[in-house]
Image 1: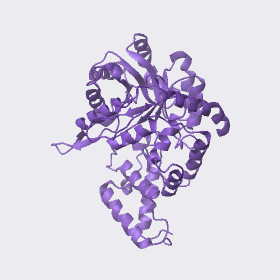
Image 2 (image 1 turned 60 degrees about the vertical axis):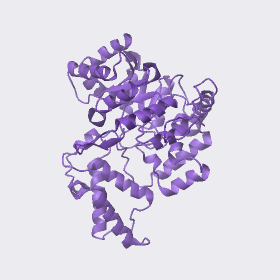
Image 3 (image 1 turned 30 degrees about the vertical axis):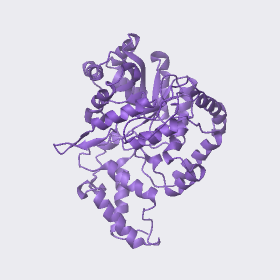
Image 4 (image 1 turned 90 degrees about the vertical axis):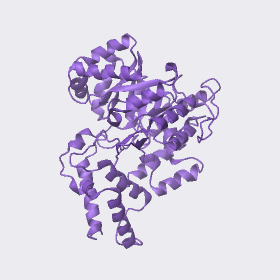
Length: 446
């Protein structure tokens, strides 16, 4: 289905749903928060599905602070403050995993949420088993989540990061854990059962073929206005994923609506285009309004580390204004232009870490991407102030990434590549960045 045909089939429904969700009675109006230092916000939270705020909280990036042991730990007081603010403004879906933040995300999330009535929040957590594992070990992880959240039911339970039918079979079906979880759903201990997906189209089709057998209650996919037609690596186009789930009427949870923050930090000339149309809105708001405008989207997850992230995202979803057909086409044109930039499609998920050779993989990619988007990327000797730009870039690189953790230390063991949900050929990208750095050092850049 091409863009225009799809807009005709989905766009009108999205607009209608968006208006309905903002109508009186769709979601309780919330008054300005009384929390000290918080921005005053009012409005109704968008609900594409009744009872679920469309803005969801991804709990993989909780704020941290340095402890007495000299190491970073989750800042529980700040987590509590942000959870309170989120709940007060209609955010009630919290997505975590036993492996996030070194295994501490579930604990911190539970500590914050259990200060509120159980019916006021919905928890989504995962069976984060990434290799064939005995039933007993899978069961241990599953049961542990109940203990941490002090609950007798989990609202949304996911099989974590499936790439194909064969992957699903070896990790979850062969051990018998899937049959067990289906029975747990029947018993009411799991309210909704689904999976998150990263992989090629054939693998997704294989999982959809299992819908008649397992009756997926929801599916979590990567979707944003860039991945709609320009997915990274071996990932599947988001338009295809959405359409396949939509026609089966399966609710969708969105991960990476900002593509790991990249869509909040796009190239400067593209920022100008967005600001020309909506001067008062943030760059990130376009990405959130995009995913919220599709009616099958139950929830769009955002890993909001700081209060200003939460407040800005709330402004997009309170009294939500869905994108019209022209605005969607405008974003697709922006996405087309973004493919002209030599960016690495890293979402900073940290799955590639730790590197056995100490390389700061996401840090290197972030430094490189930030300079490309900011226009401080040194392109040639012919550019204005080349010598100054070259020196500044190299000094900044050494400051941001310690020498022993830089790209030139990669030996292409490819351990990281196997873990990357974006299917980035990480050693190749590190080699490309290292070659660029060397060309600056030797002044061989053309």
